[in-house]
Image 1: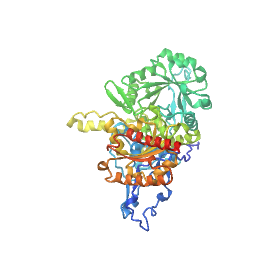
Image 2 (image 1 turned 180 degrees about the vertical axis):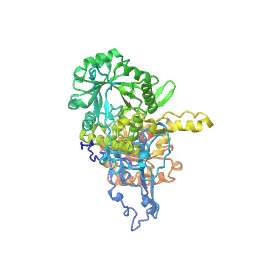
Image 3 (image 1 turned 90 degrees about the vertical axis):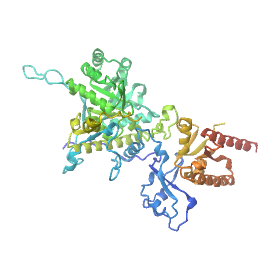
Image 4 (image 1 turned 180 degrees about the horizontal axis):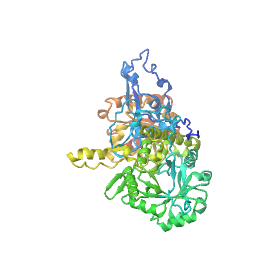
Length: 469
Length: 134
């Protein structure tokens, strides 16, 4: 039996005490000085373990408490209260919610799937990816051997072009060479970070993680330093068309390059391909009104991979208002399907991918794989306070991380995401991630259902505000 | 002289009121003060205040709401009591009680956060000038 792909996880505790969802207010003023104080009876012993973190200027009990509320209920003086932590509420923004951030921190620390307990208190549909429900019909029939056992669910994706069909000569031999392809064992690559206090440690952590997972990391050429040379086979330099000529030696040794779209034409792509025949060419396309046509033109022009980018909250601005990344990717995918060339090219989606389920949903709407950025920062303990964008200091000193620790955190996060992806595939009864691509029949879209069911009665729903605004 | 190090324990409701009145998030734009955001100013207990000085702060302030605006009803009064008690301790150990102040946003003594920081900064300057003269 061939060896299974496995991402090695290792506990990577946070450098700063994490921010808990709730905090304790214990006013000593009303304390009755009971002989058996409820704080001593805490079954998790958090009152004895609590310390004061001077770097955060906060009590560490917030991250230790399990919210059983035993002390709150039992205190005869009623001096202990639990309230939502003020710092928790200030994490992230309306898209990157505190709940998402805490879950990514947990996964990056442990490499385990976060379990929220029995019952679900949230709504059944919402904006963005929450408007999509995936098929879980096979969850009632778990496999005898378990999805993590002998039964193997494949998460390998191919990067590069495919032939539309095979051609044979008169003697029955295949005509022409098969296009170059690269396999990555997880449908995730690490994208260049849009913000953050970036340093050598951060780039090394990302590059080492990409190498350990045998996937890729996108590195803009201006961030390209000699310390990244050993990881070159797992790096994708991000260049403008003009930089290709000036960075020839940098491209030597890499397997994929990414070009920012600036009217990339067939002639130009042919010139680049002639200069670097062994390199796959990925083109970054900013999703918009015309991205379907641009994708089609690039596919016909000979690009190997298209990287469809939305903004960091997954919004795609266009003349007709804002769309979410999943809808924009779906329309690009459908345009290529209609033109009969979808199988010829690989599509990456990025922007707004915040959780493991978003990877599966992006693939269902037509992407082959995804590129993630902000979740990587979250793995490195970022709190998404956006102070770095204003040139202010980072409260968790992301720039001072040790590369080994950063690598472990990223590996833990992606391992947890991959395990969730396998769970989703197992629940759908799919054994191969490549079969999930474009399988919209295995998902339901709330907006479509609502329109079909209630649209006839109540007309068109007022347009939702864009996600994260 | 290097800039003094100030640590603030701020009630989130007070900061929200500041944001409403000025239209901008003070916390996001400032880099001079190390701030711990609390659900109520009464969360700043004596240990937190002393630890702030132990970590090298020149001055510490607690920012709460006005008494009648406190979301926890009497959280500000409790915080003021803790601050007053800690100030006595600071005097006893020779650090100086003026290095610790409690401000209640919306009262004439503190109309905005900048005013609170300026006041604590002035206190530190006075103490340091006195110290040099001695």
